[in-house]
Length: 207
Image 1 (cartoon, rainbow, N blue to C red):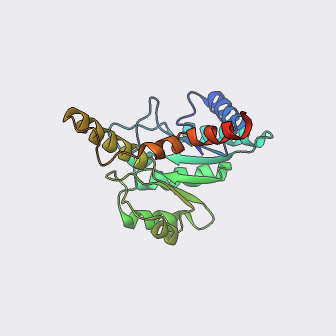
Image 2 (tube, rainbow, N blue to C red; image 1 turned 135 degrees about the vertical axis):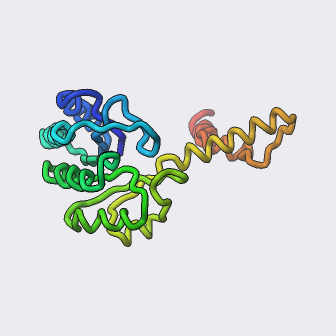
């Protein structure tokens, strides 16, 4: 699943973006209704395009999928900045256009997470983003499944963990502590980056 953002232009650009990712081998793509340049859904100053343009983007994405292209279309709305009612209106319209699933971004309460699933109905597959410390409550995938969500992404988890670990290592170097406890053992690094695989091949084929 790749993030196609706004589709990078008008409906023709959305069509081309979907086709390009499908040819590259992506299993799915998310297209959203933010105004370009888009923001992270959990940060400030977001804006969305009008209802008709939002729907036409998804119509173009679905058309690209239907032209002998095997790719899953996830339609996302950030219209929570307008109203909850607009969020539901857009999500239903996206699904009616043929999106495979919908995503309501930056849902702020557990009650609204549950209510949106009820308002969309069981026939509309719903995806959700959970960013630790962001606007949406960080529920587990089991809790979200019990509400009826079909899938969940934790898009910032690895980035946040990586930044914290790198800062800890750099702090250790600054303090001349050459062996921070957070570091992976060198032999494990060799395995992780593929050195061990090449060494094994060399022993097998190189005489």
